[in-house]
Length: 396
Ligand code: GLA
Image (cartoon, rainbow, N blue to C red; front, side, top):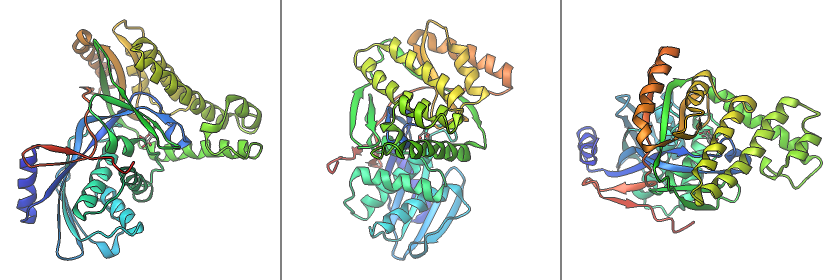
């Protein structure tokens, strides 16, 4: 949907002029399940996004319309609560976050549309939350730091969607920059933009088109295991706050004797944080082979130690392992479905997609979707003409 069409669609329903905002989905090159452990991640925003058209109302009502679900939701600023519509909850959670921070929000009309594939591990929900947060701040002329918008969006995910996620997705959706990956320190929230120079190669996402239903509870469960590991270490090392502060030796001494499974999970995270540092070095030096190798290692860990992969994701990684044209591959995001991310030689992309799609179809009777990644910018307002004005991160 073009910006002009979005504006028209909004006007047809709400009979007034909207302001337009967009927030992208994200990929993650490396650093999985490290964000909620105060660790490092390396995401980038993509050119698929959630678009929001919004206008103020005279009353305190909240009128929402979802293009994808062709559904309306009506609520009130003075009584924001969870609804039975999942898509509306991401928006309502953000409104609630503004109000809890005493940021005053007027009643509003909001039309939402997106082209981030759902359930693909590309953070469509973070994109909804960030688009809403950015739109509400603009509409109500509130001066809220960009990082606070991301934090409000993250809290919405915790409280209105029930997933205790880290900050990676919302951060990437707000702060993304075309042609760059970002290395974010999830403890200090400091970040560095790293040029995504993949000369002769591209990032290709292979979408399993499955999302196993246990994913949300398993995610929260992994987070709890990490926190348990930290608590056991902290009893002997009081300065320890996150797995970020923990070494493999500490885990061997204080966690493994208590619970081997908790140890294995924590050990993966500690190793993964180190891999992000190595990956940043490799990317800066243009050593794509080393980067790819680290990605394979990450997959192995996510699959065997952290146990958040699934047979479909493992199959896709196995298919490309050992091919000269594929430097690295791994499952991406929370797990239990969604996409693998692959570094593939330009000339080989088409053939690879064809071969793997065929094998995947034969193995699971499912069709595969493939996307060649294009990076994009973070949250921004858009003119109906399509001109964008990128968020100024002045307060960061
Ligand atoms: C999901 C969460 C993120 C992050 C990843 C795993 O995408 O929303 O916060 O934890 O999983 O790296």
